[in-house]
Image 1: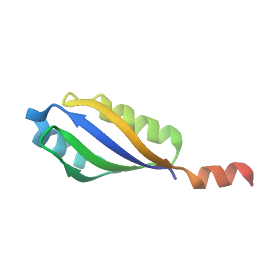
Image 2 (image 1 turned 45 degrees about the vertical axis):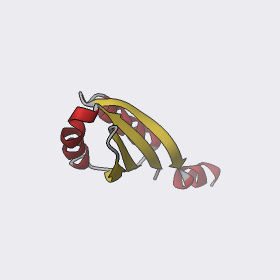
Image 3 (image 1 turned 120 degrees about the vertical axis):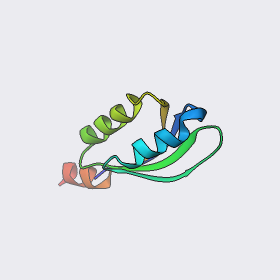
Length: 83
């Protein structure tokens, strides 16, 4: 199961709307924000393909400007490939 740490940049004037929309999404846990429209989040998905779809869904939201990857861990899938 991949887990990623991301910074989601949103339009500062729409931070509240973005926070509500994003926090309602499955696989997304918000951990903080700043006044410039940066939301800190952890994403969890069942596979790398599902993680890619989740990031694409975030990027498609009107208030979202960018989803920046800061960390990703995918040990379970890597262990399955070597077994």
